[in-house]
Image (cartoon, one colour):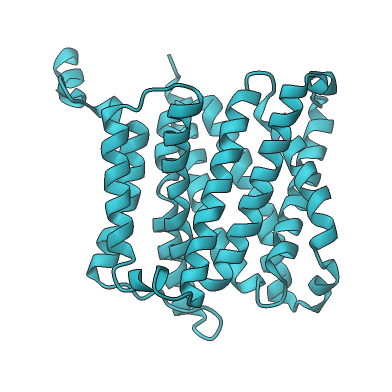
Length: 322
């Protein structure tokens, strides 16, 4: 049984992950004023690779490279590496066209793609709660884009380009997550992330323009550095949360990310209106954003609280205790 203090720490770490993921597109939006998306993605991954290298050196836990003598594992590592590379590069490109909130709302589609793909790749059966959660999430997306849905299909506006880039980023993340799921049977999470970050950093290097970072002012440079540190802190907190709390609950909390993006976007716009733009949504847009989060959360942990035959499991657990 998980100790109560571990549960509280796991909750705090999972919430920290959601907060960090929520604020990072706001910082990225500001950093992209001076650097291009590929350079920003490269700097984030590079800083993360350095951070995990120091950590693994301290813990003396570098992975055994002999594991990848098997061709299948090497191919999976490449899929995971290029999957995350594509996700970081495409997401940064999407943020250039979209608001932070919109980018993170679209990012939730990665969960849908991953769940459906897992059903085919790993022969896993989708639970009724997952299907319901996916339907709620997709309905939420339609509501969220109610004002701009025509722009996604009729003509390629900058908004439409951003949305499609965001969807491609989610697809790329799902490929990374599928390969990662298999590789984690042989490697610790931080060991795998280290290898993936190295792959991403090396292959993105020829396309990055580090000299552009020199043109950044103090606040822009802070935003660039923060984006890199954010990746280390968020993924580090996520790994530690998984070790101390049930994975389903941790995943459920991280689905709150779009709401934190909305909060931070509006907060920074109020404090620095000359640097950050307010996110304007109508009532359907807000309902859509909440529905996306609720759908992703229900798809993740719905089977713990509801069963199609048994009903609400929370009430049953309370009755059993009494």
